[in-house]
Figure 1 (tube, one colour):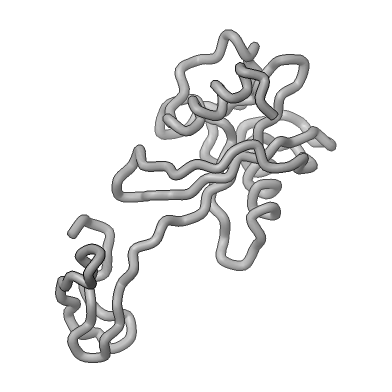
Figure 2 (spheres, helix red, strand yellow):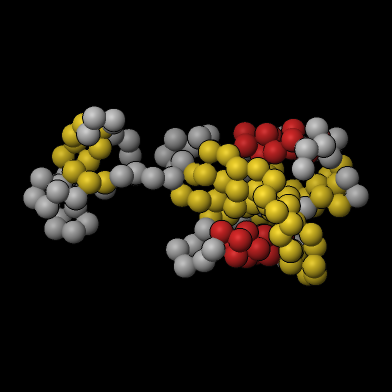
Length: 163
């Protein structure tokens, strides 16, 4: 089993054991029967395209991306998208619908399912924050290399004129 999973049961603290449930190998508690289902987390991104220029952020861990983040436990996916975008860019947006949904497999230890929303600027002042060192607009046909493969899929969709 890969790293990043439980070793002990979160309910009774017994050491978990590997077993095959007929579909795949999982971890199970021999004492209380709890099964660890390793599920992806939900991620969100907002696509802000103004005058054929796309807003991107330079991440602290390197590489350019569409401003993105994770959904917190107590918020809707839409609230997360608006919050994360504001944290990373300083801009307030109104969501204008879903542009794309993709599974992100680029980091085998942190599988996410991402939802990319169209955004329309409502206010704020552009400034990098959160996980970003820089935030700026680029011509859609002159983007820097993107860190995430799924962002590249979304950009290809934009370039093809798909809404």
